[in-house]
Length: 68
Image 1 (tube, rainbow, N blue to C red):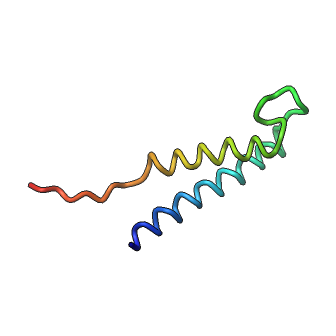
Image 2 (spheres, rainbow, N blue to C red; image 1 turned 90 degrees about the vertical axis):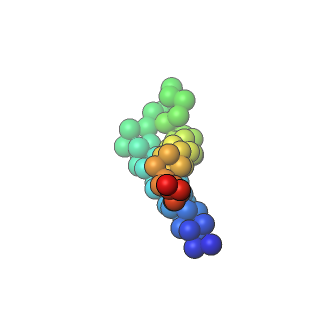
């Protein structure tokens, strides 16, 4: 059960970190309206948060025991 909470916490941290990075990217490099993603802080935050969730899922270690 502890591993389940650790997995949820890890994914949540990646998502929140991604959202923060998305806002920072919007703040420093965002467009005035011509860019699809960086023209709005919400779009930028959601886009990078989804990428953070995908990175968390891809880099997760699986705890499988070998049956050899």
